[in-house]
Amino acid sequence: MPADTTQPLEQATALPARYYAGEAMLAMEQRAVFARSWQLAAHQGQLTGPGDHVVGEIAGVPLLLVRGQDGVLRAFPNVCRHRAGPLALCDGKGARALHCKYHGWTYTLEGQLRSAPEMQGAAGFRVEDIRLPPLRVHEWQGLVFVALDEHVAPFEEVYAGIVERIAPIDLSAMHYLRRDSYDIDCNWKVYVDNFLEGYHLPHVHPGLSKVLDYRAYDTELFHWYSLQSSPLRNSTAIYGDGQAFYYFIYPNVMLNIMPGRLQTNRILPLGPGRCRVEFDYYYAQDEQAQARIAADQTFSDEVQQEDITICERVQKGLASGSYDAGRLCPRRESGVWHFHNLLRAAYLGRADASA
Image 1 (spheres, one colour):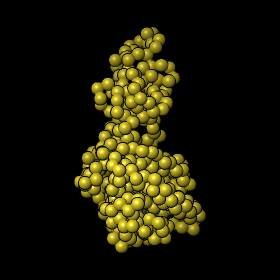
Image 2 (cartoon, helix red, strand yellow):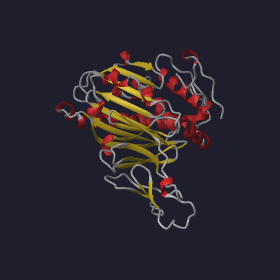
Image 3 (cartoon, rainbow, N blue to C red):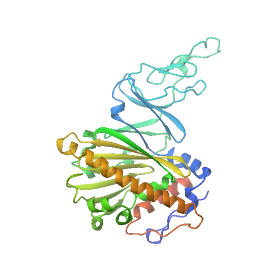
Image 4 (cartoon, rainbow, N blue to C red):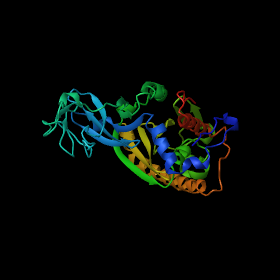
């Protein structure tokens, strides 16, 4: 499917409705977008000791993260080199080796084949010649990311400047508390589009509008991410004083940062018209932050239900045949424009996918 030509912000329209539908479109995005980007895969608390492992999937590729006996974190396809059986079926702790659940081939935690039952009659077969293919993995601020494609931009380039901008907030000092997941009847990009603008804030989020200052709400664009920020107000019981930082890192990671709290969002396509949003909550270990956890959960649930309702209605509108592509508001929707330009570059296969 051909992509649209990148437009200046003042003349820009949103992606046409046809980009939000169809199995062929989603299959192309899995290859061009998800397989060619850094994907949030776990948090470090799941992978603290040798043999700790996490399973997942990126762009249709089964994924296995495992901490080696040498303390190094590695990522492999969760696929045995024999006949594609799984090496792990679920997350776990303290495994001594990786055992294929199909035929029992066994690998070290570092990915080297150690034994292959009854293979003595296979001419020229040597276990030392077989290793699991490594994937790129990066640990950052307590989070773990994986990239399938070796040509994905360096992680340090993609996430450059975030730690410095939010200082003195220290994400690495926050501790994981819980995950909330929502399955939503909309294309994954509908949810991302909605996140990327505060234009809907006064109309969809009455409670959040009291906490954020719409007049001071600002969007900044960087190479691989955008930042929406606002001073906090009237939020003593929930977030306290300070600044709200809403980071979107292409293509599907969101970091919602408040004083004493990090919420990560991971947007996963389940089909052309359905996605899953995973919210992981992390909190600073101080009395002030702990006292706000219950209030934060109630408030966050309210905001998410409001977003789910509007996103599902937008998906119906996109599928109705009565909409193509509307003009973007330069003041309020530059983040949407930025995201759509990155997508257009990915769709075209350009190497210089810049803002």
